[in-house]
Length: 432
Image (cartoon, rainbow, N blue to C red; front, side, top):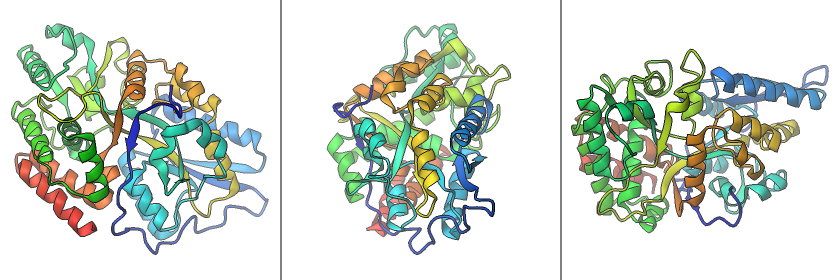
C-alpha cells in the first residue's frame, strides 16, 4: 500500500530548459457552457479498446448521473496519437479540460506556460491520501495533477513458453537474461518482442540499464543538471548493445509498433508469438484488448523485474517506471476538477484495479488488483528504495526525444554507446 510513510522516492522533476509551450494560450478556446446551461467537460484518455474503454465510458456516465447539467465528452485514443494531439491542442489553445499528465519535464513545461491548473487546495483530500505518490506531479510544493496509476516497467512473460524452453525461474541477472534468450531461441521460440517502431519501447532498455549501472545520486544529478558525463551512461549503452547483438528480438522489430494491433509488440506477446516483452504496468490491460477472448495471456502471465547488472552501481531493487495522472487545463470549468477528483475515488480506482488497467494509487483500492503478476509488481513498487521516472518524461521532450532517437539507431545498428551519450548531452546543452 502506498502511504506517506513509505521510503521510496520518485526521481521525477527535470530542469525546464526552453519551454516548448511558452506563450501558448491556456485552457479551452471555447466556452464550456451551452445555451441550455449544460457544462461540457472534455476528457482525453488512452484506454482505447476492450473492457478498459467500456469502463471509462461507464465512469463518465456515472459522474453525469450524479452531477446534473454536466456532460463528459470522452475521447479515447492511441497513446502515441494522444501525445501528439495534446501538444497541438496546447499550442492552438484548445486543450481538453481533463487529460493525462506523465510528470517530470513535460509537466514543468506545461506549468511554466500557464497551461495546467494548480490543484493543491482544490484537491487537498486526494493529495493527502496520495502522500509521497503525488511527488512526481508537484513543482515548488504545488500539485498540478492527481496520479491514478503508478508502476514499474519490467519483463512480462509467457510462463508456458518459458517452461517449454526449460527455464524454471525468471532471470535475476543480466547474464541470466542472455542465457534465457538463448534457451528460448534453441527451443524455436522468439525470446523478446520490442516495438522499436515507436522508439520509446527500445529506449526503455537503455533507461533501465542506466538505472542498474548508475548510482542513485548520479541519476538525481543528471535529472537536475542534465549531465551525462558519468561512465555509467556509456556502460548502459554497451549493455544494451550486447543484448541487441544476441538477436533476441522479433523479426521486423525496427518497424514494429508498441501496442496497436495483434502484430504489435504487445500483440505478439498476448498471442503467444514471443516469450517476453519489457513493458510497463499497463501491459495486462493492453494484452486483453488484443486477444479475441479478451483475456490476454490469462494464467500464463508472468512478470519479473529488470535484472541486476553485474558490477553496476545502481541498487538492483531500484525501479524504472512512471505513472499517469489526471491534470486539469488552466481555464477548465469547476466540474472538470470535480471529475478528476472523482476518478481518484475508491469506487473508480477499485474498478480500475479489478480490470487490470494499472496499479491504483488510492490506498483503499490496492487490494482490488486481481492479476497475480500485477499484484507482485505492486509489492515491488512499494518496496523500491527509489523510483526513476522514464527518462523521456523526466528530461522533457527535447532531451528525451534526442535520446530516444539515438537509442533507436543503436537498435538499428547505426549508432553505438558513445553516440547515445553524445546525442543526449548535445540536446541537454541546448537546454541549459
